[in-house]
Image (cartoon, rainbow, N blue to C red):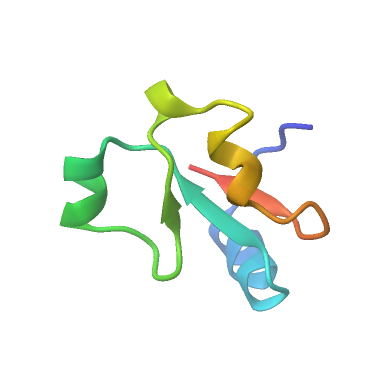
Length: 62
């Protein structure tokens, strides 16, 4: 399910243990990202690449 969220909701989700996935290319990710975010570039999103994510925690993709 896709849901747009605001900054406050993002911070609450992070505090609650949400997994943060940054879909920018590696170069842009290395220039800056949310602390604790994992990088899975959009072009590489597959069932295999997202298998590192826990199914019991919310996922925020940006």
